[in-house]
Amino acid sequence: MSVASPTPQQVGATAQLVDFIGRRDRRAEPATRAALRGLTVDTVGVAVAGLSTPAAVLVRDWVEDQTPSGTGAPSGTGAPSDAVAPAGTAAVWGSTSRLGPAAAALVNGTAAHALDWDDAAPSMAMHPAAVLLPTLFALAARRPVTGAELDAAYSVGSAVFRAVSEVLPHAVHYGRGWHNTSTTGRLAATAAGCRLLDLDGNVTAHALGIAASQASGSLANFGTMTKPMHAGLASRDAVMAVGLARRGFTANPAQLEARGGFLDLFGDHDPRRTAVLGERLEHWVTDWVDDYAIKAYPSCFATQRAIDAGLSLREELGADAGRVSRIEVTLEHGGTRPLRDTGPGNGLEAKFSLEYTLAVALLTGNVLLGDFTDEALKRPGVAELMARIELAERPPAEEPGHTVVRLHTGDGRLLVRDVHHSRGDSHRPLSPAELAAKFHQCVGRGPAKASWFDALHAVPDADEPQDLQRLLAGPPAQG
Image 1: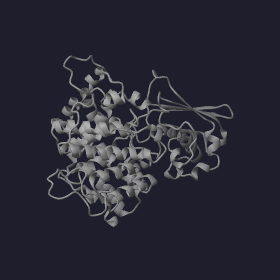
Image 2: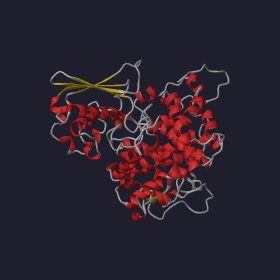
Image 3: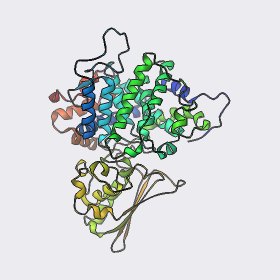
Image 4: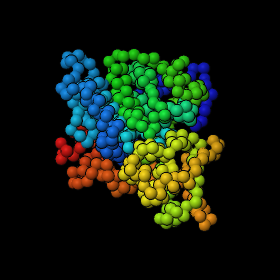
């Protein structure tokens, strides 16, 4: 990212965001629409599968306990109808349940992130779709939207996610232990919501200020139920920030750059980086399509390249893991930050263990949902192979974005794999058949489920405003 010198009349970060969000002169990009098709079916699919996880079950139970069926805000208030709303308006994806938009965003966002099988951004640690789509689909509960509107809002949110992360910068922010999906994610989802609802600049500035004060989420909770709830909270708070701002709720309209504001608190505030925020937003609004990944394996993105390397090595080595003497894995600088530094104690923690996921890839030839149970951790040979794996990071100055696995055999051979793009990365995308197979692994199979896949895949292409809630509830057989 290039850094310009600050100017005396430099426009603040919040004002640059507001101007970017409000622009309507960009042409539609077929590439963003195509990427959003895949992300829509993938995010809904992994969320439906995630609904049965303990994290999503407990969050949903708590939400429904707070909002008894049939209750809601008093009628005749004249308030905008997009934020914390009466029960029964926004779908819990893949179910007959309806909640208020903010509550639905919390449940769907948590479920989308619960299996750690949701999307990722290879350039920076974040899961954009798991935050943006629950927000946008929740806001669409009260306002039918076109595919073009969804595409524009999603692209705005994707750009804000990446550009603000660069300005912090991400290495400092994440290095302090902040979960970027949760922190910067609130700003990104709020920006996307403001764009979807076509809010004016003043309201948008206050919405961003509200969201900035809600930001939280620490890496210390990785491997627990709280980690996936980070995505749900970011989505919920974005719906809340948009709704409150529309009602006249105020915040500092220059919150991001203010003393004690978002950039001060969560990063290393440098006016030279802030000066180019607008340029980076315009870059990312289209170029995010070269920086997303639909995960092939249900584990932390930091494990994905190593899994690919392990599967390739297994083909050369054969199924006899006993021939492995030692494995050295070298990740980019900071690449071990989201990973566990101790052995996993349960199936959820195993999703953040590169040693475990690589061992499973070498032993079984795949990494599947069933590999992340407490029982799977005890399979013969897993602990022994994990003990032979060593992790290291490259120095900061060396090329980022790839993982090298060096496997030493007992007879003195050295097998090496250097993986730059994991399977499912936008540079190495899943085929339509692979995407459909992942969706059906999540939601089940049958003609109705296949039709649901096709209908969700077509959501970004709708020319007329569409009521998404009936579609999000699942195929007709599910009600």
